[in-house]
Length: 125
Image (cartoon, rainbow, N blue to C red):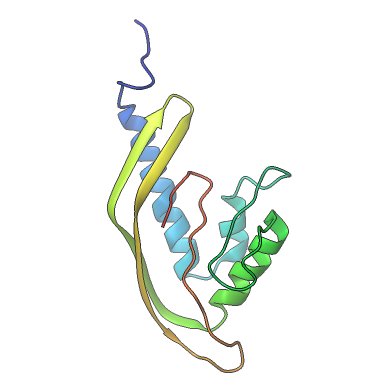
């Protein structure tokens, strides 16, 4: 039987990606940055843009540091995705949805916190 990476749904892989996304969100809520970092595919190809200044491309080390800094002032965080869709193409998954969140922010001494989303699974938010 031939595998069609475009037409086949790869349901077990979709479920595995959904479970990983839940683990990532749990790590974010718990401010477990070591566990969160373990889910990233860090290396020379890892880059991300953030919507917080500076708006430059960030490498893995800078990204991890900035994520921890941004969440330092956040309490009572609730996160999730509306309309989460996971498409699997053989060994690659693309997850898309609207990242929704709310929280309480202590603006002293950390300063303002802006929303962000970075996933090695291809989620955009």
